[in-house]
Length: 217
Image 1 (cartoon, one colour):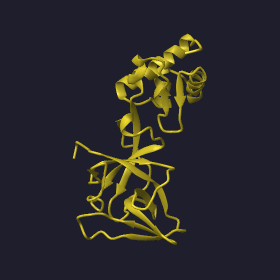
Image 2 (cartoon, rainbow, N blue to C red):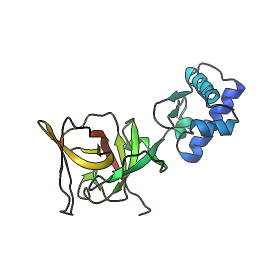
Image 3 (tube, one colour):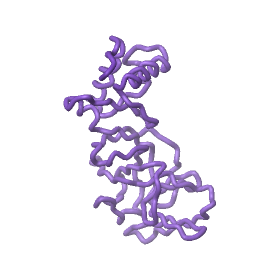
Image 4 (cartoon, rainbow, N blue to C red):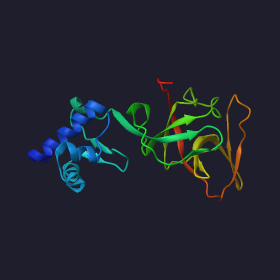
């Protein structure tokens, strides 16, 4: 790196690196505040701003969005995992799961599996309305994790997370003139499409880009 760090900045960077090694994702502001015994989050941010200005880290808008900038092969271990927050459940059926953000933990995923995609969050599938649909050979079965990308374009036939009447649902999407169709792909024929006015208050919250097994189910 071009600029030397102060002793205090070295300590902050060391804590971030060690946290990456132990957990596979970056520490939060609160965790850094506690580790460094700093009285305010603003004090933490000031140290992060200094590290970023000197080129040692990059900060993003994502939760735990600190990335260490590598200047040698030995540092690669700090960045090969992405921490993706699990924000709740997506109902694969009638939209019944409220779309309130929750803290269900962090998915630690190798960057190479995500193709450098950003603005990601995780959800847990509830229900079986999409159990015949697969992404990269993995079916959207109940209990599996979904990796969802926000602020991305989607096409007919893509799997999206939609907010309908305040509830999150995961479905295939198709657009026809002034109608948006959210349709299932299931072995259970009870599930039917949802038809929405394209100008309704419903919203598409993201596109599902990855399905991950949940070994605990």
